Length: 119
Image 1 (spheres, one colour):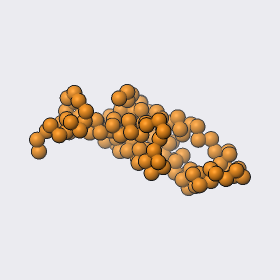
Image 2 (image 1 turned 45 degrees about the horizontal axis):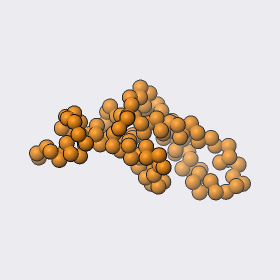
Image 3 (image 1 turned 60 degrees about the horizontal axis):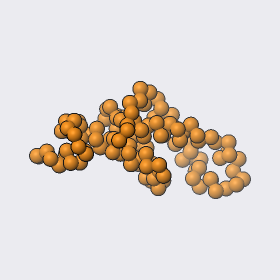
Image 4 (image 1 turned 180 degrees about the vertical axis):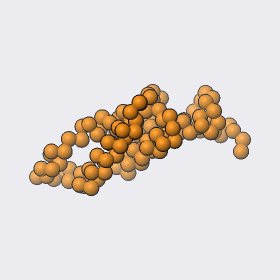
């Protein structure tokens, strides 16, 4: 995993979230197939896509950031997932962070570390 630190995570997430909310309200997914939809033609989602990629490549440093990343992944899965697998990698980063929090930063995959612990 190549997750990176992101100093402006929360402002970027808020922008992404608000844009996603607006797009959902406008019904962008259902309107996309309509060739005569001028509003959709004017809606540039490029910055949102770039922000999402930066957020999904982030290694969470708090429960707040982990929860925000899970919201992005949840929305992607609801929309059939991302073709570049960033949602799956983000999920792995959150899972690893939670394992580190729960049992320490040992080497190895998160689930293996969690299963090695005794209740």
